[in-house]
Length: 329
Image (cartoon, rainbow, N blue to C red):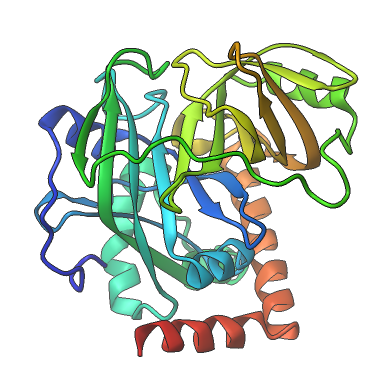
């Protein structure tokens, strides 16, 4: 998976390395053509090679929309923002930024070799005639995303408070405000409902595109809501001033990522001179998975089957392969 990553000139501390290896989930952020950022949860499963300066994660080819965005613009970020049910109790909020490369066709041997590592984080794989058929797309049609690390930023605690330690490329200045979208900056979904969904989930982060093009992911809280949007808490004072497109992720999970609840928003962030931050959600999606392993696997298997079928029907798989070949040339 990480064998083809070029020699790196960046490393990170033992504390951060334990976090990267130990967290059961991370917040993946990627940029959009309009200059925004989408942030969603992924399972890194301990993919971390400090000697090579690389991290990564794996996903199903049936969940191909984010893969197309990543192949088109490989600047991504992974925020290791929650120690819950993982293997580390170290305190840092760790933000890793780098360039992603997507292996769309890993060998069966590579997938099988990764299985024991995945089982440590997500539980043993289900086997048998029925499970093999149901979970074929979810288990076997995997994609490995490797990230050649450009920068690692670590704050002393999960609220991203205090002075950060930065390895790799120096931190750029805050990005300038963005022009407003043509359809306006105000909320386009039910603000009160969105605020309730956010406050019901324990892990909240926001992402925006930084001045150097890499997504930035920071922890947030919710202070209330009105017709103008959701009033955010910015514990680390990390949100840049002015207006810009931004993505929000809120989620909850149990051991082995069972009992998932996830909400993903895109929208407009406005930060006033006094630091007051208001988020106007434009789109919303999410899901709630049952707190039972077998039911979760059935859900994942069916979603992967449907997603892969749709990707093939719409030509997404071919577009991904063509884009990946173009990037590699």
